[in-house]
Image 1 (tube, protein in one colour):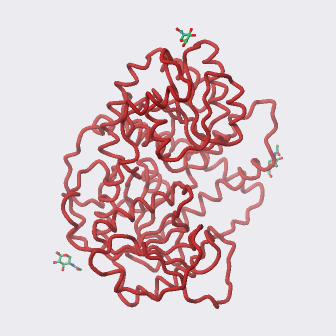
Image 2 (cartoon, helix red, strand yellow):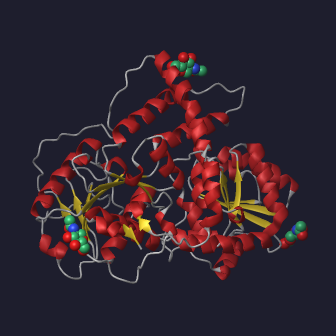
Image 3 (tube, protein in one colour):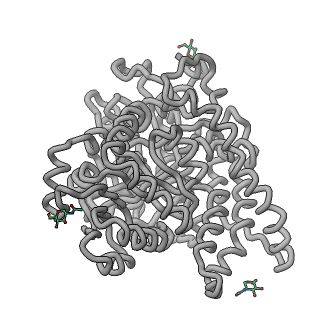
Amino acid sequence: MIILYSQHKNMALNNTKCKKPCLSLQSSLSTTLFFIVLFTIPALLLLHTPTTSISTFTTLSTQPRAWSGDLRMAEFAWNRLTFAGHRPPPVSLKIAVFSRKWPSGSVPGGMERHAHTLHVALARRGHRVHVFTSPLDDHAPSEPHGSDNRVASGPGFLSPFIHCHEGEPGQWRYNKAWEQFEKDNQQEPFDVVHSESVALPHWLARRLSNLAVSWHGIALESVQSSIYQDLTRPDNEPISPAFNESLQGVIPKVLNEIRFFKYYQHHVAISDSCGEMLRDVYQIPSKRVHVIVNGVNEEDFREDLALGNEFRASIGIPPNASLVLGVAGRLVKDKGHPLLYEAFSKLKAKHSNVYLVIAGSGPWQQRYQDLGSQVKVLGSMNPSQLRAFYNAIDIFVNPTLRPQGLDLTLMEAMMSGKPVMASRFPSIKGTIVVDDEFGFMFAPNVESLAATLEAAVAEGAKRMRERGKKCQAYAASMFTANKMALAYEKLFLCIKNETYCNYP
Ligand SMILES: *[C@@H]1O[C@H](CO)[C@@H](O)[C@H](O)[C@H]1NC(C)=O
Ligand SMILES: *[C@@H]1O[C@H](CO)[C@@H](O)[C@H](O)[C@H]1NC(C)=O
Ligand SMILES: *[C@@H]1O[C@H](CO)[C@@H](O)[C@H](O)[C@H]1NC(C)=O
C-alpha cells in the first residue's frame, strides 16, 4: 500500500468542529413539538408501508433475477443481479474515495470496513483507486512523498493509493482532503468520486456531477431508533434529560438531511428500505438512488462444522445441549441487551439445556455472567475466533434497537450457514429476512423476543440447520464482498459513461 502525507504542514489550522453540516434550525419549543407530531406520524406510517411492497418482492427474492434495462431505473438491490466478475472491466477507472478514516490495524467500524473491503477489491480489478483520508492511526508519518502518479497508474498497481492529509490521526479535515483531491484532479480528472456518508460535505459534493455517496444510516431511520429505545423504558422510570433532549433534535435532523441530500448526485442506499425512504421521503429522483447492499468477505465467514463443534466443546457447552443461541457485538443498551438479558433469563428457567453464547464486551457483560452456566460470555473476538463462534451456534440473535444502516453480523451469520433472529426493522425485513425460512423477526420488546425464543427452542437444532442451509445459499448470492464490488463497479462505469448503464 502506498501512503502519502500532505506536504502542507505549515498551513494555518482551520479546524472546524462541524462534523455534519450545521444548518441550525432555530425553532422554538412549540414548533419543535409541532414538527414532531406532524412528521412522526407520517414517518411511522411510512416505515410500515414497505411491508406490502417488499413482500410482493419476497417471492422473487431468492430466485435469480432475469432483468434487463437501464440500471438507473432498478429499484431493487443490484446484488440480486449477476455480474461477469471473471472478465476484466471494459475500462480502468480513476476513482477518488473520501473516507474519514481508513482502517489500519485496529478493529474498524462498519463504515471504514465497507470502504476498505470495497476499494481493495476495485483496485484488484485494475481500477486506480485514490483514497483521501485522515492520518492513519498507528502509523508514524514517514517522510512525505510527492504526488507521484507514475506509481498510481503503473502496470501491476493493485492496491488503493492512500492520501492522508496532515494533522492528528483519525481527525478528518475534509477541506485538506479536498485540496489534495483538486490538485490530483487537475492533473488527470477522476472518472468518479465516492464519498462514504458525509465525508465530503454537500457544499463541496454539489460541484461534482460524477459523485456517488453511500449512506450507512440516515436520520429518518433514527426516528424509529428513538421510539424503540424509549419504549424499553419502564412506565415508572422517568425519561433521562439527555435522551429527552436528543428527542427534540430528531425531526429537525431529518428535515436538514432532506434539504441537503439533493446536492449529492448519486445515492447508494445499503438496504432496500433505505432506498425507498430516499425516493419517497427524501424525494431524490429514482434514477439517482441505487441500492447496493454491503458485503462481507466470503473467505472470512464460511461453514465449518468441525471448527464449530470444537469451539463449542472448548467453551464448555455439553454435547446434549438442545439449542445454542449466539449474539455478537458491543454489549450496550441500544444494541438491545436489556431485552435479550430479560428474555433469556425467562427462557433458561424453563429450558435447562438451552445456551446463549456472547461474543463481545461492554457494560452488560457482568450482568450476563451473573446468569450462570447457560450463558457463555467470551469477550471481544478477532475474525478467526468469530468464524468459530458463528459455526458453534444454532441460531444468531440480533436484538438491536438501532435501525440505522444494516448490521453486517446478520450477513456474517447467514454466510456461516446460520438462521437469524432479529428486530422487525424495515431494513432487515426488506433485505435480510426476506423469506420466512431465513429466521425469525420480533418486535423489540421483551414479550415478543421471549415468545420468539420459545418458538426457536420448540423447532430445535435440526430445523435450524435446514433453515441455515437456505440462509447460506441466499447470503452467497447476495452478501459477498465480490458481489458488492462488482455492483459498485457497474455503477461507477455507468457514472462515467451512460452506455455502461445498460444491463446486462
Ligand atoms: C423534555 O423536554 C421538553 C422540551 O425541552 C420539556 O418540556 C419536558 O419537560 C422534558 N421532559 C422531561 C421529563 O424531562
Ligand atoms: C446433559 O448432560 C449433562 C452431563 O454432561 C447432564 O448433567 C444433564 O442432566 C444432561 N441434560 C439433559 C437434559 O439430558
Ligand atoms: C461512451 O462509450 C461509448 C462506447 O464505448 C463510446 O462510443 C462513447 O464515445 C462514449 N461516450 C463518452 C461521452 O465518452
